[in-house]
Length: 137
Image 1 (cartoon, one colour):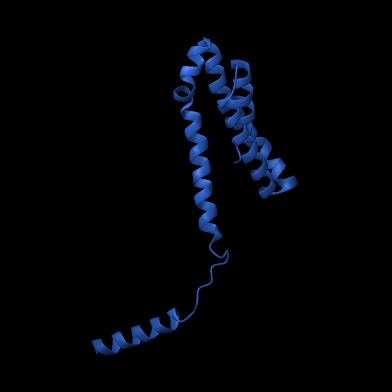
Image 2: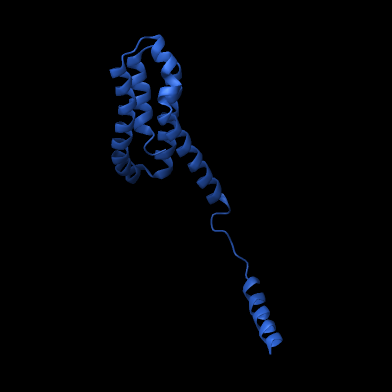
């Protein structure tokens, strides 16, 4: 009686496993998910490490603590405001173009921040350029 039940259950599972499961995106979904994780991790990590990354530079050029706090806080403000704008831009141009463009501009802002010569330019490159574009990339 137990053997009959095992045979029936094993026969039922053979017919179920005989069907071939096709991946609808041909495996690209896992890569896109991983790269989105990497992008988000780098973007957020860079924002929270601002004091560690730029502390020596800001001390060297004798930047006031008020300007430093404006740079850091405006990054987060522009990121939040940028996410509101992204919704309408995505409807107009599509996700692919918007994410590519904002990812490029965010990377450009971070790269320009590494070579800045003044606090005012750091405010532009880090807070405005990188902050606004980090909301969707």
